[in-house]
Image (spheres, rainbow, N blue to C red):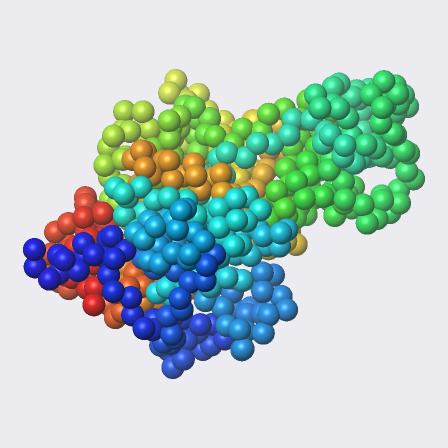
Length: 583
């Protein structure tokens, strides 16, 4: 065994000698100029763990667009309010694989040197949100102390073991992948919120014969239902059910009477746009807005699609005159044998959704990936050639550039692609995932939906982003608009199982690698959207330049030889990379 092999083996075991100091990238305030000093990381003393702490080594870190948001706003970021970054800088990096290299005296029975973990970035300790790479020092540092808030948080330990056969990049990228997995696992209510607050309001055009049906949950009933301008028969039915089920019904004279309320359910009967726009600010986080009957639904209402994403609102509807019909199931997995579209698929997260669609157990019969321009989008068929080939008998894959202002003719062509095998007209798309941060794209997606279709707003549109949505389409076609943001530790566990089993390989997301000194250049590349996939930083490699995987052929031919099909990252390539470059 030569010196490089011995060094790599010691590294893999977490047994290499520890340095007296280490490097990290501090962010001292808003703007790229405040990242590091003189465009370089800084060196600080290596701490010793206290009795209830672990000293961990950061092995791989994925760069995320969320990192750029912190840089853009500095101390105004919601996770950093009240922090003086000049004296208490932030160290970014929340997509992290790490190894225990020293164990505090009180933890020797639980942890040992060489254990490898990934970390759930959203950490809650005694009710306080602490996120890795935000409030807590993150992965753009070679080492870190992990203490009580992570090891004994409100949801238990936020470290999850990384299987021996997985690589560091695979581990680090389970965090963004968990957000993708979470988007397909959300459980939505199919009834009123138990113990919640509901509003049922009617426009003048509401059907006088509308009925309640059974929107009540098995767990009980809401605490109160507010009634506004309801037909007498429906109000009588509601009061009868309230007497039987033990909740209150309160009539109100206007929506202004409910100002300041946070309503779990908003049911609008024959809603016109003005009624919708006045009611939507009353929605609590996690609320469902149910449009019943198509009454006066003309034109487009301004729908806060940012709240659909960040506050997990659901917008549902039914053409029926029965309230309960609007509470049908909200499908979050692809419709088997259906048609699905990824709008804005060229970026790193879009490619993850594309890969998952190809590897899903219920793979659609049609996958259409779109983006405004073709440069990065055109790489998808080559990058995922093997997955596409494996599905060719069951799934047709198309990639289409839409341009900056898609035309009605283009959307008509895309709808026509959903035609059935018997040649019948295309009904539209059953599932549309929105990756493009554009209100107009959301509005366009609703028009492309098939009856019963689902739009998932995955792109991080800010709260207050209004999209012109024809409410008629929501109610008449019984479609659903939902959104998803982030992931929980259960999602991370589920994604880790997917990676361990080989059902989903996060390594396919990697497009470039770099040492720690190139992290700033990598973040700039994320800002400029230069990379059609994920950039992975190896903190223990000090100075390797930011390099696209195909370019390794010239810089590190021995590593390049270990790449998989279409120059994809592999565990073998990662180990060869570390063997060559560890100091």
